[in-house]
Length: 71
Image (cartoon, rainbow, N blue to C red; front, side):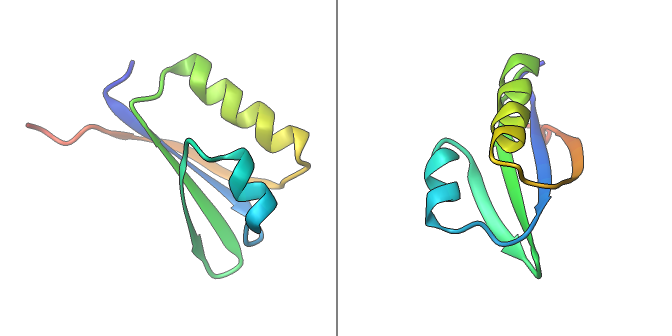
């Protein structure tokens, strides 16, 4: 499904080196967490994001999918 946005929250505020790894993802910070948003991603893209998070040793707090807004 490519009609939705995946929202992933990890613990900590991402520094420049982490942001560089996720250059294809919108990132923001809220308190002591970083929120990654990937619009139009399919399951393979989601698994790729999760793999990068794991490879960096980031603590995954939440993953959810937001449905696309009606046109």
